[in-house]
Length: 584
Ligand SMILES: [Zn+2]
Image (cartoon, rainbow, N blue to C red):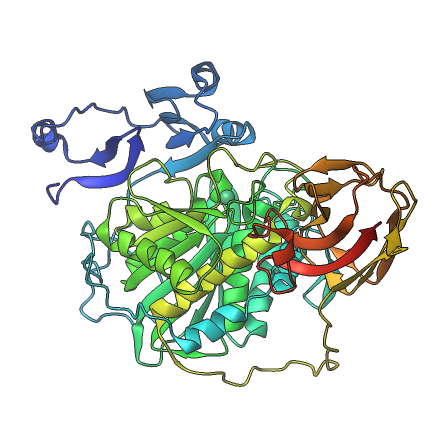
């Protein structure tokens, strides 16, 4: 693209890449001569903007026609011209929106700014900004791809209870402390002035509590003011090299109650826990932790943040954006990584995939280059020429049905999946920043009580009597000790001379292995229960019948071919016991 033609954004309609560009009228002929199909867009009128809108269910052209001027329309993506209120209406209908505008301008300054500071320093404008040279060449990664003990230690610090609690703190499940007073974050919608102020303050104070310097990055858009939250951890060797881990904190719907647990308390949890864990280490490069707002209004917060970064010549070598990383109902562990067409972004995606495989995280990652996933804050980085990726959950068949609704609650999150995703996010950030030393003492604000160690959960499963004749009644009793602070499935199955049977609460049996309860969110112990008092064993033949009770990570069937292989060390087993009965 000639340098006097400014690319506003690029997106895909199917396999076709589309660019929105601007140039002086004299260059119109040049654009047409690029050999591409090209059309001229009218300048948006007063109060109007260009928006890209997308819908997973497919575009409804009549809906768009009612509230906008449609400039270009594909099956799932359209470019429209309308005002913010109409765009918000489309967002309320479940569409994702992105405001399209000129990319940030770079400051021409004789002295390069120090880049270790927390955020964009000031905006200025002069010449158009060229694409930055990419830090990595494809296939020539400069980072360490082998397993590293320090990275492993960092990854191991991400735990299910921490992920569970932080999603709860952000989505109104827990009361939190903000400004020294208790507060429950009921909504994080950017139009809800007080709650979003509290939510951003929570992020700010959390960062500060980790000993990081935090700043607010204020912006004003279409009559409302909001702010991003930025924390910085200066690199000790190359402070000018900046890597960003980011997520949008704001949510939908625009209502007094909007939990937004998956979208996007989950991604924000990755950023906050990254700050908590990585702040205990020293790194060669600078890490920035960023929580955006205004994402649901068209990627507004990230637009202003990136504009500020470009204006202050921040040397951003990569941004990892996480948006919706906790929903996995089918338990396949699918992770989608959107890299766009820029090779330097692809290298970031490759590193995320490599982290998942090198550190044996039970996730199934897929990398995308082309496609229309410009629908989150990473695309603000793309538009400015910075390498960036989006990490998201299954965006297809297993898409979160509670998306943008009052029901986007923690109970629907798969905490085991989210924990692995956060491990991948934190591990990848650490590898980019290159840790050079182990734990630095963590600042303690107030000495808390020494936590009592939590014993691992256990099940005691009993059969009475242990020996009986066919038709005789017997009891299966279950006592549970401990806590399981994440979703789990509960199984009771019987290994019989006739095969494997699932045992139901009414005493019935069905062939095969099916969970008795599916996706139970959490369990605080101790609990005890008698499951049922009679089982109709489907035969009169003698033999040993072994009953198994197991709590298993939600959505994970233990990878065993026979139940006899089940043991507490079987992957995905949280708690387990067995009880044999012999039939004479
Ligand atoms: Zn989102």
